[in-house]
Amino acid sequence: MDYFDDTDKLFYLTHGADTSYYTPSHIEFVDEFKLLMCANNGVAGDYGADRKGFRFGIEAAKALNLPITIVGADANTKFFEIHNDLLQYKKLTVIDTNPSEEEKVKIFKEHHIFLHPSNLEYGHPNLTLCEAASCCLPIVGTYRGSKPIFGLQLIVDIDTESVITGIKDTIRDYFQIRESMLNVRERYDWINVLKELEKMYYAVSKFQNFSSQRIRDSYSKVYNETIKYD
Image (cartoon, rainbow, N blue to C red; front, side, top):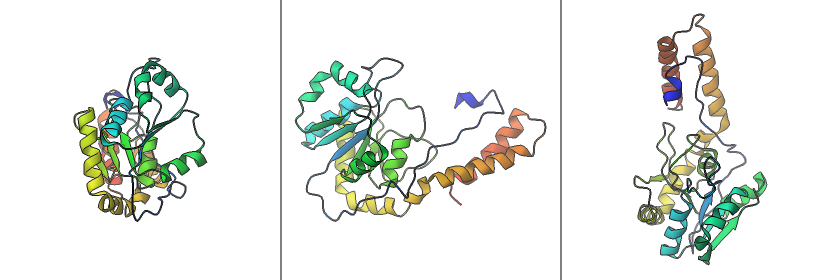
């Protein structure tokens, strides 16, 4: 990130999730895979901008004849007013009431695959990715940050066909992917973010006179050690 190049007083912490609250449901058999997108779309006041890739997700669901739910706040209402053709898909459910944490956990547990074909993010990984991973929902998305998200099928080209391929690959290996996510879900917990913050603090506090290169080297060492979850 370029933001960090010109200062030794700015540090980056990733998001986390409450893994004791965002817990996985017990799944032995899936009759019909239910897709989920959880995001507020638009960017910089442009409510029609498809930053989160809703169109790709809905078109992919339609091509595969799968139900899809999109969850977010009232900004999404404005998005669908502009892109009202997407509402014609009969298996689309839009929840734009900004659900509570309790409602959101219930929604996560009722779905099987999380879609996140985003072309622009403000946080890496963003909160919903951590929550989906904590719930062991296999993910099809574009996240390529330094904090690993296990069970993510990476989309290189952000388009409908790539989302379709990602969903098909996830369905094919669904239970193997989910099993691997179950084994590492605690890694997304906020406690690990706090441990990282603590290491940063002690790494930086030993310097009385900051110099960007010294702080950057010290921070990089701590950061690289921490994301390995040693």
